[in-house]
Image 1 (spheres, rainbow, N blue to C red):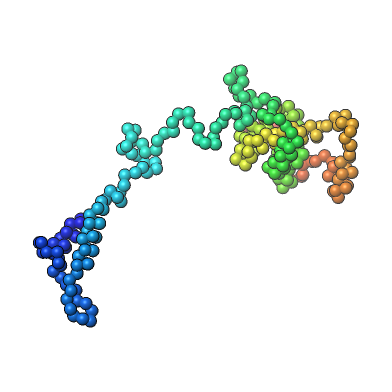
Image 2 (cartoon, rainbow, N blue to C red; image 1 turned 120 degrees about the vertical axis):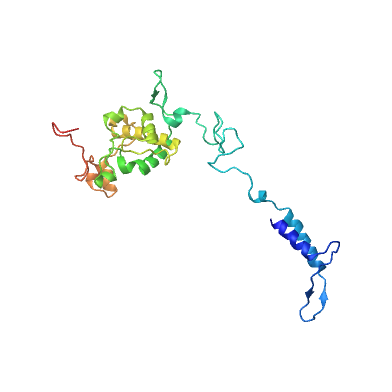
Length: 261
């Protein structure tokens, strides 16, 4: 449309066969007439430039997210991911390392009592650090389920030192941290897989330490009383005593006989 309008204006300004415009411009203050060859050249240049513009340059055919498309036979703009492709950084080659389970003979996933890598002191220190950061607020630093949230009136967390947890395989702790259990949310986003395994190893070491006997300690290691250590640290004597749930903690009571369950 703009091209036709420019052609119509050009036909009014110029006579056939005449390259000099019919209009003239008065120079300010002089009153002399002069031809506008430069103006004519600029007009033709602009006309040639505009003649190359098309609507397709503005309305370009392209793919829009979540819209249909006539390019493909299925009329879908978003293409399905090819089968068996793995994005970079998402290769899940070691199933046991990432899930804590292995295929069982009966077809179900099983939790073996094993670690995917050797446990060293460095692994246990890393597990202790992550345990105190993410687990201790609920389970306490010794794992008895009487963490700081219980001191503020919440229900005690699972006691990692009872017979039920002692009988569980070490990979069970990794599985619970990965997928959550009951009121405990999953920590797969907050804790990396190798750190979750380090926490699981530390939980096992914590269980052994809380149930250790004097005969389990090598003769070359000096055993000290916890009350003496608490006194040196300026703590009350009760700090070395067994922990008990506070009176404001939420307790689970058995329903009365005949009450709906």
